[in-house]
Length: 251
Image (cartoon, rainbow, N blue to C red; front, side, top):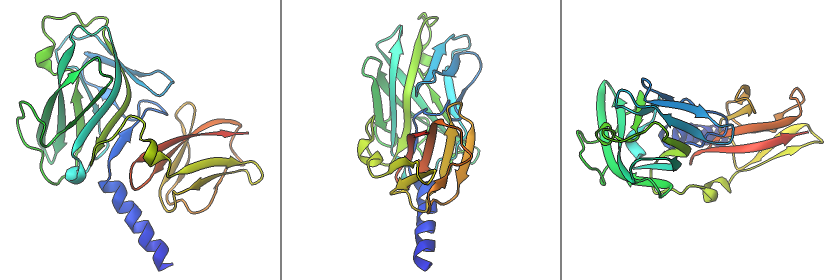
Protein backbone atom coordinates (compact mmCIF):
# COMPACT_ATOMS: atom_id res chain seq x y z
CA UNK A 1 0.00 0.00 0.00
CA UNK A 2 2.80 2.40 0.91
CA UNK A 3 4.55 1.61 -2.36
CA UNK A 4 1.39 2.35 -4.37
CA UNK A 5 0.87 5.61 -2.50
CA UNK A 6 4.48 6.65 -3.14
CA UNK A 7 4.13 5.86 -6.85
CA UNK A 8 0.90 7.85 -6.99
CA UNK A 9 2.48 10.89 -5.37
CA UNK A 10 5.51 10.70 -7.65
CA UNK A 11 3.30 10.50 -10.72
CA UNK A 12 1.17 13.45 -9.63
CA UNK A 13 4.28 15.55 -8.93
CA UNK A 14 5.79 14.66 -12.30
CA UNK A 15 2.65 15.67 -14.18
CA UNK A 16 2.75 19.13 -12.62
CA UNK A 17 6.41 19.61 -13.45
CA UNK A 18 6.72 17.68 -16.70
CA UNK A 19 6.64 18.85 -20.26
CA UNK A 20 3.33 19.63 -21.94
CA UNK A 21 2.60 18.46 -25.46
CA UNK A 22 -0.49 19.24 -27.52
CA UNK A 23 -0.93 16.98 -30.55
CA UNK A 24 -4.54 17.87 -31.47
CA UNK A 25 -5.85 14.31 -31.57
CA UNK A 26 -9.17 15.27 -30.00
CA UNK A 27 -9.68 18.89 -31.06
CA UNK A 28 -8.14 22.32 -30.54
CA UNK A 29 -7.13 21.25 -26.99
CA UNK A 30 -7.78 24.62 -25.34
CA UNK A 31 -6.11 26.84 -27.95
CA UNK A 32 -7.84 30.04 -29.00
CA UNK A 33 -6.89 33.29 -30.75
CA UNK A 34 -6.95 37.01 -30.00
CA UNK A 35 -8.92 39.44 -32.13
CA UNK A 36 -9.52 38.50 -35.74
CA UNK A 37 -5.95 38.08 -36.96
CA UNK A 38 -6.07 34.27 -36.86
CA UNK A 39 -9.10 32.00 -37.24
CA UNK A 40 -8.16 28.70 -35.53
CA UNK A 41 -10.05 25.48 -36.22
CA UNK A 42 -9.59 21.70 -36.00
CA UNK A 43 -9.38 19.70 -39.21
CA UNK A 44 -10.59 16.42 -37.60
CA UNK A 45 -7.22 14.95 -38.53
CA UNK A 46 -4.81 15.77 -35.68
CA UNK A 47 -4.10 19.38 -36.67
CA UNK A 48 -4.86 22.87 -35.41
CA UNK A 49 -5.40 24.99 -38.53
CA UNK A 50 -4.74 28.75 -38.32
CA UNK A 51 -6.05 30.80 -41.24
CA UNK A 52 -4.62 34.31 -41.36
CA UNK A 53 -6.88 37.34 -41.81
CA UNK A 54 -4.69 39.98 -40.21
CA UNK A 55 -6.32 43.29 -39.34
CA UNK A 56 -4.70 44.30 -36.05
CA UNK A 57 -1.15 42.99 -36.56
CA UNK A 58 -1.10 40.65 -33.54
CA UNK A 59 -1.60 37.09 -34.87
CA UNK A 60 -1.60 35.34 -31.48
CA UNK A 61 -2.89 31.97 -30.27
CA UNK A 62 -3.10 31.21 -26.55
CA UNK A 63 -3.76 28.43 -24.03
CA UNK A 64 -4.66 28.74 -20.35
CA UNK A 65 -3.36 25.32 -19.25
CA UNK A 66 -0.89 25.94 -16.36
CA UNK A 67 2.73 25.20 -17.16
CA UNK A 68 5.38 24.97 -14.45
CA UNK A 69 8.40 26.63 -16.07
CA UNK A 70 10.92 25.20 -13.59
CA UNK A 71 11.77 22.32 -15.96
CA UNK A 72 10.95 23.98 -19.28
CA UNK A 73 13.85 24.80 -21.59
CA UNK A 74 12.62 24.19 -25.13
CA UNK A 75 9.73 25.24 -27.35
CA UNK A 76 8.82 22.90 -30.22
CA UNK A 77 6.43 23.35 -33.14
CA UNK A 78 5.62 20.89 -35.94
CA UNK A 79 3.71 22.55 -38.77
CA UNK A 80 2.92 22.99 -42.44
CA UNK A 81 2.81 26.57 -43.77
CA UNK A 82 0.78 27.40 -46.89
CA UNK A 83 0.94 30.60 -48.98
CA UNK A 84 3.20 32.41 -46.53
CA UNK A 85 4.58 35.69 -47.93
CA UNK A 86 7.89 35.31 -46.08
CA UNK A 87 10.50 32.55 -45.99
CA UNK A 88 11.32 33.17 -42.32
CA UNK A 89 9.61 35.01 -39.48
CA UNK A 90 10.27 35.94 -35.89
CA UNK A 91 8.11 33.95 -33.44
CA UNK A 92 7.23 35.37 -30.01
CA UNK A 93 6.52 33.14 -26.99
CA UNK A 94 4.93 34.86 -23.99
CA UNK A 95 4.33 33.47 -20.50
CA UNK A 96 2.00 35.17 -18.01
CA UNK A 97 3.25 34.34 -14.51
CA UNK A 98 2.02 36.04 -11.35
CA UNK A 99 0.80 39.12 -13.18
CA UNK A 100 4.09 39.54 -15.09
CA UNK A 101 4.81 38.81 -18.75
CA UNK A 102 7.96 37.01 -19.90
CA UNK A 103 9.00 36.78 -23.55
CA UNK A 104 11.28 34.69 -25.74
CA UNK A 105 11.77 35.20 -29.50
CA UNK A 106 13.49 33.25 -32.26
CA UNK A 107 13.45 33.13 -36.07
CA UNK A 108 11.53 30.27 -37.71
CA UNK A 109 12.29 28.90 -41.18
CA UNK A 110 8.80 28.56 -42.67
CA UNK A 111 9.74 25.78 -45.11
CA UNK A 112 11.37 23.53 -42.50
CA UNK A 113 8.17 22.03 -41.03
CA UNK A 114 9.72 21.88 -37.57
CA UNK A 115 10.78 24.70 -35.26
CA UNK A 116 12.62 24.29 -31.97
CA UNK A 117 14.76 26.50 -29.78
CA UNK A 118 15.98 26.89 -26.21
CA UNK A 119 13.78 29.60 -24.71
CA UNK A 120 16.40 30.36 -22.06
CA UNK A 121 19.58 30.61 -24.12
CA UNK A 122 18.75 30.92 -27.85
CA UNK A 123 16.68 34.08 -27.54
CA UNK A 124 16.52 37.12 -29.85
CA UNK A 125 15.18 40.53 -28.76
CA UNK A 126 14.08 39.34 -25.34
CA UNK A 127 12.26 41.84 -23.13
CA UNK A 128 12.66 39.80 -19.95
CA UNK A 129 14.28 36.54 -18.91
CA UNK A 130 12.08 33.56 -18.10
CA UNK A 131 12.27 32.96 -14.32
CA UNK A 132 13.69 29.76 -12.87
CA UNK A 133 10.36 28.90 -11.22
CA UNK A 134 6.73 29.85 -11.60
CA UNK A 135 3.48 28.57 -13.07
CA UNK A 136 1.84 30.24 -16.05
CA UNK A 137 -1.75 31.44 -16.10
CA UNK A 138 -1.59 31.83 -19.86
CA UNK A 139 0.76 30.91 -22.71
CA UNK A 140 0.76 33.04 -25.86
CA UNK A 141 2.41 32.28 -29.19
CA UNK A 142 2.61 35.06 -31.76
CA UNK A 143 3.28 33.55 -35.21
CA UNK A 144 4.68 35.68 -36.69
CA UNK A 145 5.74 38.50 -34.39
CA UNK A 146 3.82 41.70 -35.18
CA UNK A 147 7.04 43.29 -36.52
CA UNK A 148 7.00 40.72 -39.38
CA UNK A 149 3.43 41.39 -40.50
CA UNK A 150 3.51 44.77 -42.26
CA UNK A 151 4.00 45.10 -46.00
CA UNK A 152 2.91 41.54 -46.85
CA UNK A 153 -0.31 39.94 -48.04
CA UNK A 154 -1.50 37.36 -45.49
CA UNK A 155 -5.02 36.90 -46.87
CA UNK A 156 -4.36 33.36 -48.16
CA UNK A 157 -1.76 32.27 -45.58
CA UNK A 158 -2.46 29.35 -43.26
CA UNK A 159 -0.56 27.33 -40.70
CA UNK A 160 -1.45 23.70 -40.03
CA UNK A 161 -0.03 22.82 -36.61
CA UNK A 162 0.54 19.15 -35.84
CA UNK A 163 2.20 19.62 -32.45
CA UNK A 164 3.05 22.30 -29.88
CA UNK A 165 5.37 21.38 -27.02
CA UNK A 166 7.18 22.91 -24.07
CA UNK A 167 9.80 20.44 -22.90
CA UNK A 168 12.74 20.02 -20.56
CA UNK A 169 14.99 18.68 -23.32
CA UNK A 170 15.16 18.40 -27.10
CA UNK A 171 12.20 16.58 -28.58
CA UNK A 172 11.13 15.26 -31.98
CA UNK A 173 7.95 15.39 -33.98
CA UNK A 174 6.97 11.80 -33.33
CA UNK A 175 8.16 11.21 -29.76
CA UNK A 176 8.13 7.51 -30.66
CA UNK A 177 10.57 6.58 -27.92
CA UNK A 178 8.34 8.00 -25.21
CA UNK A 179 5.10 6.67 -26.65
CA UNK A 180 6.53 3.17 -27.03
CA UNK A 181 6.74 2.87 -23.25
CA UNK A 182 2.93 2.86 -22.96
CA UNK A 183 0.85 0.19 -24.72
CA UNK A 184 -2.94 0.38 -25.09
CA UNK A 185 -5.42 -2.15 -26.44
CA UNK A 186 -9.08 -3.17 -26.24
CA UNK A 187 -9.92 -6.57 -24.74
CA UNK A 188 -13.22 -7.79 -26.22
CA UNK A 189 -13.56 -10.65 -23.72
CA UNK A 190 -13.59 -8.35 -20.70
CA UNK A 191 -15.08 -5.29 -22.48
CA UNK A 192 -12.28 -3.10 -21.20
CA UNK A 193 -9.36 -0.92 -22.23
CA UNK A 194 -6.03 -2.19 -20.95
CA UNK A 195 -2.93 -0.05 -20.63
CA UNK A 196 0.62 -1.19 -19.95
CA UNK A 197 3.15 1.24 -18.46
CA UNK A 198 0.57 3.79 -17.26
CA UNK A 199 0.05 2.66 -13.65
CA UNK A 200 -1.24 5.28 -11.18
CA UNK A 201 -1.52 8.05 -13.76
CA UNK A 202 -4.66 9.97 -14.84
CA UNK A 203 -6.44 8.80 -18.01
CA UNK A 204 -9.12 10.62 -20.00
CA UNK A 205 -11.22 8.95 -22.71
CA UNK A 206 -12.83 11.02 -25.49
CA UNK A 207 -15.14 10.08 -28.34
CA UNK A 208 -14.36 11.21 -31.90
CA UNK A 209 -16.27 14.47 -31.39
CA UNK A 210 -13.92 15.43 -28.57
CA UNK A 211 -16.49 14.76 -25.81
CA UNK A 212 -15.06 13.43 -22.55
CA UNK A 213 -16.76 10.09 -21.87
CA UNK A 214 -14.66 8.76 -19.00
CA UNK A 215 -12.03 10.09 -16.60
CA UNK A 216 -9.79 7.96 -14.40
CA UNK A 217 -7.82 9.73 -11.67
CA UNK A 218 -5.24 6.98 -11.15
CA UNK A 219 -5.13 4.04 -13.54
CA UNK A 220 -4.55 0.69 -11.84
CA UNK A 221 -7.17 -1.65 -13.34
CA UNK A 222 -8.65 -2.05 -16.87
CA UNK A 223 -11.12 0.65 -17.90
CA UNK A 224 -14.65 -0.75 -18.14
CA UNK A 225 -16.29 -0.05 -21.54
CA UNK A 226 -19.64 -1.92 -21.36
CA UNK A 227 -21.53 1.38 -21.62
CA UNK A 228 -19.48 2.61 -24.60
CA UNK A 229 -20.87 2.55 -28.13
CA UNK A 230 -18.78 0.78 -30.75
CA UNK A 231 -16.32 3.05 -32.52
CA UNK A 232 -13.04 4.95 -32.24
CA UNK A 233 -12.05 6.56 -28.94
CA UNK A 234 -9.11 8.75 -28.00
CA UNK A 235 -7.12 8.16 -24.81
CA UNK A 236 -5.09 10.90 -23.16
CA UNK A 237 -2.57 9.40 -20.76
CA UNK A 238 -0.91 11.86 -18.40
CA UNK A 239 2.35 10.00 -17.87
CA UNK A 240 5.36 11.24 -15.96
CA UNK A 241 7.16 12.08 -19.24
CA UNK A 242 4.49 13.59 -21.45
CA UNK A 243 0.82 13.61 -22.33
CA UNK A 244 0.48 10.54 -24.54
CA UNK A 245 -2.46 10.22 -26.96
CA UNK A 246 -3.66 6.86 -28.26
CA UNK A 247 -6.55 5.74 -30.48
CA UNK A 248 -8.65 2.74 -29.44
CA UNK A 249 -11.20 0.85 -31.58
CA UNK A 250 -14.00 -0.50 -29.38
CA UNK A 251 -16.07 -3.18 -31.08
